[in-house]
Length: 114
Image 1 (cartoon, helix red, strand yellow):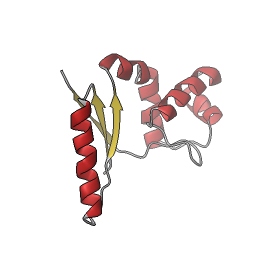
Image 2 (tube, rainbow, N blue to C red):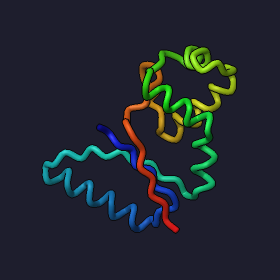
Image 3 (cartoon, rainbow, N blue to C red):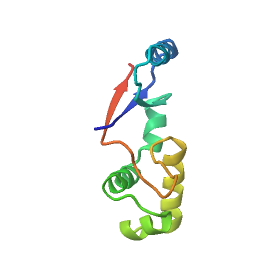
Image 4 (spheres, rainbow, N blue to C red):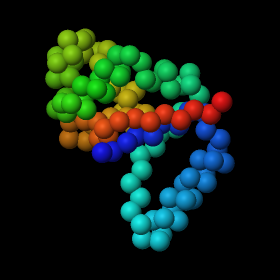
C-alpha cells in the first residue's frame, strides 16, 4: 500500500530536516519511497482539494482513465470544469498524467501544524 502524506503549514526547518533524513537513508543504501505534498496553509489545501476534485481522485484511484474527456464522461461532468480540476490536481502532484490519468497511492495522511 502506498500512502501520500500531505503536510499543511509545516515549519520549513522541520521539512528541511525530513529531506536531510531521507537523503541520509538513501546515501546509506536504504530504499526511500515516500510521497509528500506540502501546502503552505489550510486555505491553500482547501482551494486544491475541493469536493469535486476529491471525487476525481477517488474515481482515478479505482479506474485510471485515458483522457480528461473520458473522465468527464464517466463522471457526468462538463469537460471544461473537469479539465480545470485535473490541471489543478496535476500541478499539485496529486494526479499522474503520464500515459493517461491515474492516482498512484492508496490512502492519504494529513498533518497540519497549528
